[in-house]
Amino acid sequence: MNLTTINNLIDRIRGRTLTFFSAGNQWRRRIALFLAVIGPGIITSNVDNDAGGIATYTQAGSAYGYSLLWSLIPMTIALYVTMEMCSRMGVITGKGLSDLIREEFGFRSTFFVMITGFLVDLGNVVAEFAGVAAAAQIFGVSKYIAVPLAAVAVWVLVLKGTYRQVEVVFLIACVFYLSYLFSALLSHPDWLLAARMTVIPTIHFDVSYLITLTALVGTTIAPWQFFYLQASFVEKKVGPRQYPQARLDVLLGSISCMIIVFFIIICTAATLHASGLTNITDAGEAAKALVPLAGKWAALMFAFGLLNASLFAATILPLSTAHVICEGMGFEAGIDHKFREAPAFYWLYTILILAGAGIVMIPNVPLWKIFIFSQVGNGVWLPIVVIFILLLVNRRDLMGEHTNTVAFNVVAWITAVAMIVLTFVLVGQGIYQWVRGVPG
Image (cartoon, rainbow, N blue to C red; front, side, top):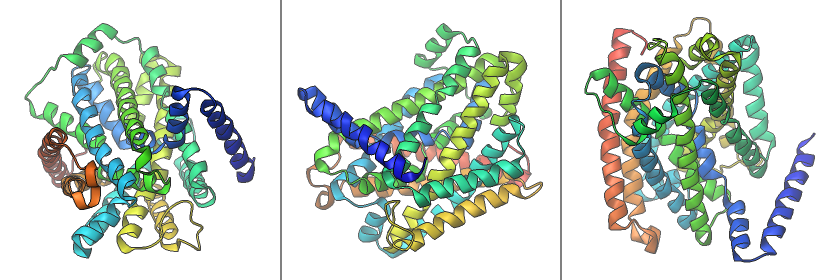
């Protein structure tokens, strides 16, 4: 099936769906409008459950069982608040976040954002291809076969596809995250205990617990998300009239992302933690350990989820970085442009794919050090980007009547300060691990 056939199929399905809903009453028209807007929020939130994220959730579940489930509720709120501001800026201004930073704060600020973003996201891309390698090995495929095939697949998808085609593929990838639901069901967890631990906080003040909690927040809310989300709404040409639907898209994305995190922690808590395997920090290692504990199918579902998440993120992270740099430099950017129309955008994307996959292919490369570097880099980058967002979203000359309300600003600043404090803890731990030379 070639791209033209896929495009025609998408047109036919979407056209018939919109016609059906538009022909009915008001609720049908509202659903039709939402279907036209849906995508950026759900995709951006779910792709954050990448290889690094799954490794962190695995560590949380194996080390502490169900006791960290309570953190998912405030994390959902924090994720929604930060992402909603970016979606609002995108649909109201029609500009990407890097664009706005350059226009409002000058090139020096933008240059720092671009350089930091490139280096941090390169580390993140390496982590995603490492996830592809780990998942493939569980299925008996060498990384020297799986990683090059994955790199070619994600490169061709973006280079040859339109924004609409790529978005459909991304939405399908979001559905595949349900493999973690099946892993959790096959693990036979204590659902009542899990429900109680989700709504009743259980806080320990030992260093390891606090570091794991910090890592959960740090891996759930990453700076690249803001740039990609805002650029996606702009590229999709979602305008102010569709803002309510865009906001709902972000809300559903935030909730669905945390539901998947819930199932990953449930699965590892019911198996690894219950069996005393509390030192597992790698998602691939966790999938292998699930075989004798929950059965082959639970392990395969977990490994499939890791492969899907890694491929998903390996496609989107380089896109986010290309948007950051090209918007900051004033170059054309976006999947709907051809290579000759946006050469800088596509060359950046290609370089990140080649570098990320190439590093993973190096024998005995210290992938854990690269992963720590990306965590530390995210930690340094995140507070700065959040402050830029808060300053921009409260500019009445930019946002008009869509600036933050007082209540929303209170929630947003509390979220930002909490993220900054937790992030500095994560940065300190990452630097400590780097100096000591001990994988964490």
